Length: 154
Image (cartoon, rainbow, N blue to C red):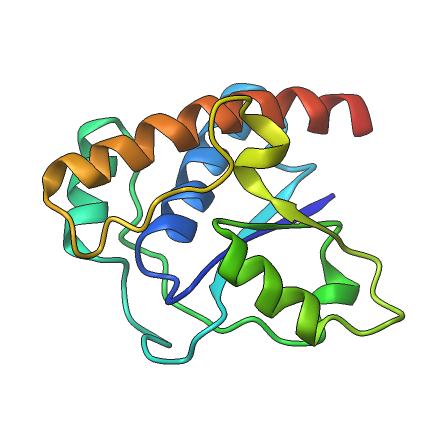
């Protein structure tokens, strides 16, 4: 099983989701059965580490994002991944526009699928530290439900 998280630049929300899900999969004993990655629909940050504020907030909760590097979504990702989960409506539209007809990936909004309260992970880039904490709260809760779904699929 392979999961790809997608946001705009791949330096805040999607690398946070990747780090949280990897951690939760290790805790659930599923780390070798599920591959997790993240990417951005934009190309501005390719090769860069996650935003320092994302790294700091994640590390305070036990998630290390420091080894991750931003990458851009490619058309090949639609054949490689089983689930491609967008952080917001804009990125979901971008993904749908580039999705090839023969791709196997299920596309959805991450929180629409795993949170009954909100359907988008807000972009904390221009917000203060509290924005990064809010993103982590949403992602942790949704990743708990994603792990349950993945267990069922395996």
